[in-house]
Length: 108
Image 1 (cartoon, one colour):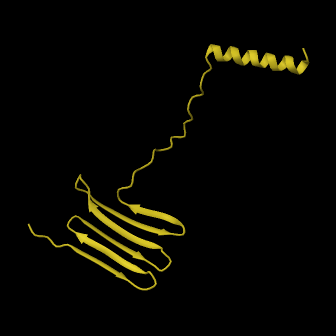
Image 2 (image 1 turned 180 degrees about the vertical axis):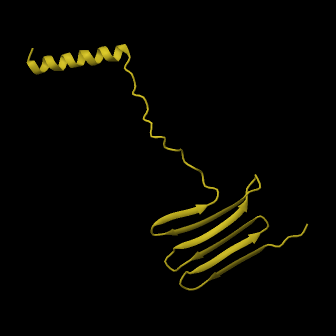
Image 3 (image 1 turned 90 degrees about the vertical axis):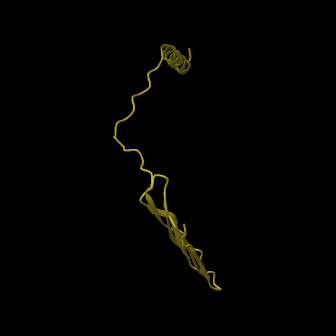
């Protein structure tokens, strides 16, 4: 089977650049300005056959990405976990400690 693949790169003396490639099933582009800020995108076909598209910006505000295939975080159901129950040994130790603190404060 025959296929076409392309790539390009252009850059000036100030460090500004534009580069990318295209290949069956994947492609990418990137634009960099003279300050090092970058804007780009890429796409590929994942193992499940879905086309994944990603766009990103990298500049003084950090790396920011948008995609149709980002992981989804857990949903906050606003239910607090149950408090940990003391074992009988821990309850006894707390009581002994409280008694010792009270005795120390009273000077006994």
